[in-house]
Length: 127
Image (tube, rainbow, N blue to C red):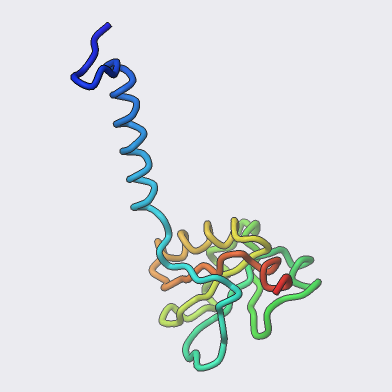
C-alpha cells in the first residue's frame, strides 16, 4: 500500500478529495433564489405572482392570500404557466418545500425570475 507524507493511504486521500469536490459542487449549485415563507410579505410587492404548486385538494384546504394554483404534478404544468406574465417575479411554495424547489429550478430555466419560499405552507401554518 502506498502512503503519502501524512501517513494516509492513497485511496483514502483520493476519496477525501472526491468528497470535498462533491461538497463544493453541491454548494455552488444550491438555489440562491430562496426566501423563508415565514419571512415573506406581500406588502409593497408589485409585479409579482404568488404561485402555489400543490394539488388542487391541498390548495382547497388552505393557501396564501392571492395565490394562483398550478399543480406541479400536472402533465401540462409548463403550458399552464402561460397565464403568468414573464416580467413578474414568481414566489413559489408548496407543502414543505420539495416541489417548490423543483418548480423554481424549472421556472428559472424557462426564463422566469422565481423565488422558492422555503418551508412551504406547513411552515407558514406553524407560525
